Image (tube, rainbow, N blue to C red; front, side, top):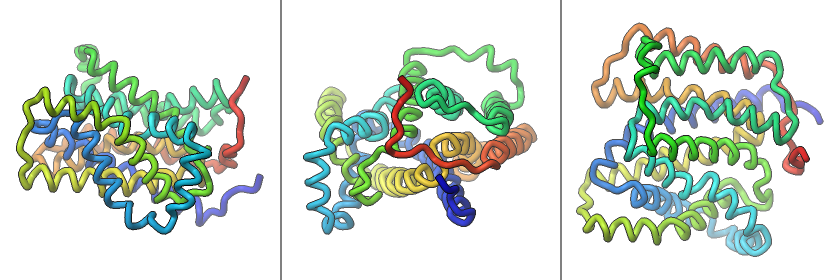
Length: 311
């Protein structure tokens, strides 16, 4: 299989870096919204925004959408469970019982899971640069999350919320590897629209139940603006960019770049909620970026959409 042109790879990497930046901003905004909105309600509302935003854009593809829903519904439901509203609900449910620091730490294991699953399921061995770059990048992430003191990691206590988020991380790694199998008859917009549609059908009943148990709550301007942001800028746009990048550089390299997410989260937290940046941030940033770049240096053919798991 011929390699993807350099210019196309560069555009794909730019899209993936943009994706991690937007996902990093989502952590800041969503954590603030969870002070007033229950996690399942927030997850469902986030994808309702995606559905509404995409509806006019995918209307011309309604016949292709109907055809795909009839013939590819099993695959679409599987991808929705792995990367749509149910996965978001799992993240938010865990975050409600844990901390943003733990979420960042667990997110940093996504590239590890991707490489291990790809190795065990698709028999794809990591190359030398990936084997070197991944631990370097992971070290930078851990340094940032430990605030420069690696001994503090020994004091972290994990609870059921952490286990939920770990499950969500593992699910997302599988989604990343399965993404190449999405129906090619659908545009990226139409594909994400289907994820939003099926995901909300699966999660809205549980969100409604949580709403009733919470006794309802009032949506103010802050909540509406926050939902609009996480639904469009932090969900819709990165979902499109991530799918674009994975299709062009492969799941493994896309996964390695997820290590940049805690970097952006730290920067946004400093800019918008007043947290300070320290020298260990700079050291961590250098390790994260250096390891990610090293792991992505050698281009390779991406896993074919027709690839079969290892048996």
